[in-house]
Length: 157
Figure: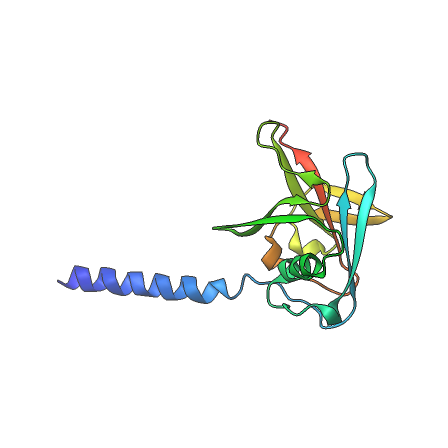
């Protein structure tokens, strides 16, 4: 009987910690400033969208709120997002779309280095170093001046 009570208590503690930590996965979003969202097209050109943070209503979910704003604005940005156990996932944006047959997927890069990881690949965007994101869209921190880049990549394996 004591083992069952101990097991139940342990399970409840783990559940409570899990629920509390979920609120910590959301990135911070500045109240004011601007953000650049760029989509690298197959031909190497970019579709660029400027977002003023004052206009974004959902500031509780990092970059996800920025994409929701752009999608609702209906300014020509094509967007397909899927919810997964890891949060929102971009399967298509602008002119690029994942392709399971070829192994192509949409990768996210950010100018906020703290949202990346040690040894992460980098790309240059207009003289700014962008880091492969190590967090999901909802976990990304959005500061005034942040650049978020979406590009199509393939698995080298």
